[in-house]
Length: 469
Image 1 (cartoon, rainbow, N blue to C red):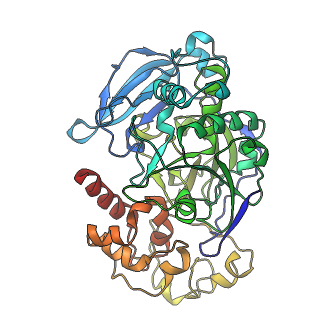
Image 2 (tube, rainbow, N blue to C red; image 1 turned 180 degrees about the vertical axis):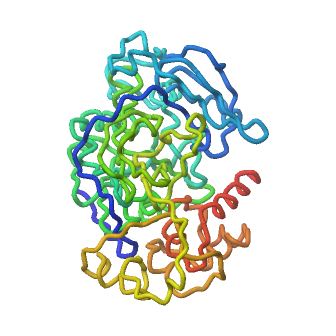
Image 3 (cartoon, rainbow, N blue to C red; image 1 turned 90 degrees about the vertical axis):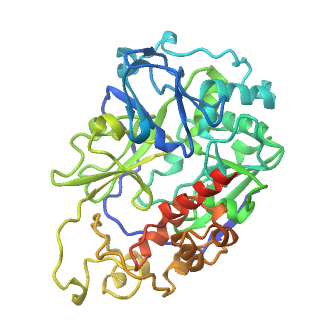
């Protein structure tokens, strides 16, 4: 029996570019990559060199700060580039796929074998064997720990584990569509993951899903249903509602497509890299739900699907994502935890005295413009062509209740955001910053009259806490 949690605050963004919820096969691609920025606080120790041939699942680098955590190849082929940034910090490792990978006809010889793999599936494993196989295969990195949102240490434990099987981001893929034909693997993954914690494993779903069959028989699994506007689908909302964390109370979380990959690993002993993603947005000429692969190079994947004018590709949703570099060889790849690519037009044109106009084409969460009366906020049906413009420059932080309108967590957002901007660590921690990740503050950034980006401010505070131990 699932419990229902109704999230009454948030925002359902009326944005154009919604894809039809039918999966199509993506274009064939030649390259994949692992992006270092996907893993906070990671310091890479490279185990391969440019020109090396690698197998799918072979180790590429190890975390110096978390010895025993390996990052493995998302495809078999040749390492064509190891990109570095400032102070020689790793940016990405790029792999040119071999012919078998490109054609989708992989052989056993394309896969790295794992000594920790035992036949019999998840039911035949104990906690230590589950941990050993995840570490050896590199799938340990699908787990993230709160606080700090980092890959857990190899010898750490969690008080609770969260499985996020709901996505309320704008233009996101429907979870039920993405899991079509994969529910057995999803269940196998849940069985394996449940052995990593002595506490509860919360499986969080939307009100249109029913995974009761998949959690049946798993002793510590609890099915929780969330309903409401974004951020009802964020793990931060789930953790705050069900199992608040602090320095001494750690929770791990994992996305639903990674649960499928874990399930297939324990059934076959091989790394599964399939990803079902949403390509969408106002600049998407042909929005679609695309079947592709982990770490895929995005430009050839969406060739012919974007507007001809200036387009910004976001690895993630319009609320929270990474702007893809124009240098495709460096960062133009799908992130480790991403299941969306959003295309929006660059907003370079300035509008003279735009604030004097009725604003029928401008979205607003307040009644400053006429548009809220026509959009989905108040029952209308108008959708908007959002672009990258912030419609104004940085200004004072004015508390007019907008943050409280979109923040469903039981915190005081205005005071917390002010502490983050001032780098006031003690006050920020007292106000609840340890429960949060950048995505949890994305709505505050979106509605901010001061045009501040609160995600980087939060990450600065979390980095300071991490450095101080």
